[in-house]
Image (tube, rainbow, N blue to C red; front, side, top):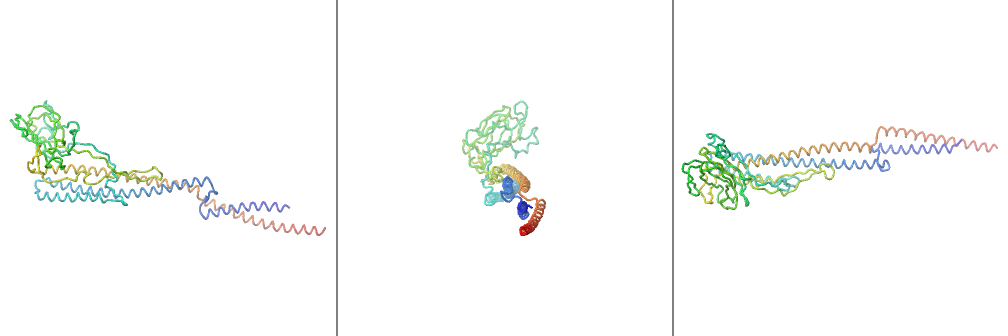
Length: 454
């Protein structure tokens, strides 16, 4: 009987069963199939790579959620400023009434200035985690060029009696074709030279068979009087916010191009370059208005970058404008009747109405409110995009975690089965060894007895 050979085979099988049993025990205790590189070298490497990516994705979700909170703070501030400017615009509209006394206008102006100071306070103080949001630090806006746009004229009461719209003349070309009261020469910006932004109104105020030009004193014969008014709170305009000039233009004398007005306080500062149409007596009452805006520089801030993908280079940029009244263009609005100067910068009294000042303020406020709406739209879009990024990162992290789990985690059902099998094999192996030991003792006694008998 080959007892020793049988014993070696049993011991080898028992060792395998006990090793497997030990591995199954560790897997069941930890829930992991791969606990060290020895368990599955290539599997561990793959699992660690996936785990690193999952960790990045989970952190990116946190980053995005924090950025979303920042944008919520920004939108709340923008909403507050928008509400304030809506209130200021209501005050401006309220001021455009002959029922308001000078004292009433002063009170309205005081409230406007208080409200605008609050806008600057919000711009200066709104912050998130120590970051000032609207002080220009994150302003990456592009530079804007000089611009001029036509706006509704504040003096159009006579338009209902005219055969063409209030901003048109009856025969712009002298051949009976209606056309705009004023057209621009090029962009309307004279050059070279500095520029004074202004609210500008042209109005045909009357007709005379023997018109005399008030500036030159020259008789022009049958002609119309064209009033030019420019309102600007920029002190470069001259000695008062409103410039007024009245010119006599002969009727049916054809059109001419390249007329220009400069600032009364400094002829080197430009207001507008324009073309004049052919006038007729029927053009009395025509009126047209423009708003000119100077170029603005680009924002000097930088984008706020938020990693939204868990990897280097996957970042979203957040930009927020400077929210001060100066950058919004409403810092100097007024509803008070302005003092006036002529084209020589000589004082000519105070306007009997605040019409130009209030109209200019209303246009500026409308532009500022439009700008705020656009900014809020961008902020809202960024919030939605960040939310989608967070959802995508969360789903990717879940799927990557599943992939890691399939490599690293133990299959509990299979492991329990293997554990039970190996436990049984170990028990059987131990029992067999015991039986082999008994058989070896019997064999030894038999051999000794046989030898003694001999």
